[in-house]
Length: 242
Image (cartoon, rainbow, N blue to C red; front, side):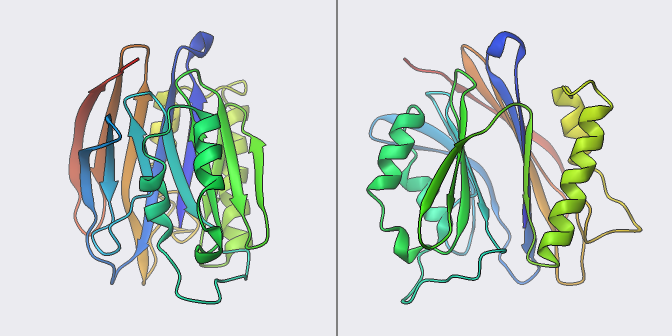
């Protein structure tokens, strides 16, 4: 239950990426972004306090990984499933899209429920991988783009959000600015609370909004929470390394 958007900066001099994390109320409160390091490469990611994984991570190579659950595909692992959020941590040291692909090839996907994984590199190249239980399907992801997921009325809710994103694009000549995307991710429609990008249901809600801004010398990560309590935006900086 999440919504992801991204847009390349002018001249593809970096990019901006936004992620709303939706979660059921019984789940433990997520932890805000914190620094980590894998194979000598620093990274920054919020964490799921229960399973320990993450839905989004950016590293000092300027590569961001974002994961959305696929509720439309009924396949599930035959044995004990592994948390999909741990896959993102597995791929933390990847410096480019080729390294992400290589990392995915080394993972036992049969233990993971279906997902969509997006990777955006420092040069504003982006790719999505869809795991459906049978095959991992990669595809190039253009700019701007939106992906969404919902455990409730999946096809209806996702179609509604994507339609709203198309309206946003049409209103900005196909190229909404980072400020436009930031505002769109905060929209809550009281007449369609479960469909809203910042959603609210009796059993679930949008927990947080994370904004990753990658530019030639540094990464900025802005993070704010909406539920169970609203907290003002906090910002972290991560210098890029060669």
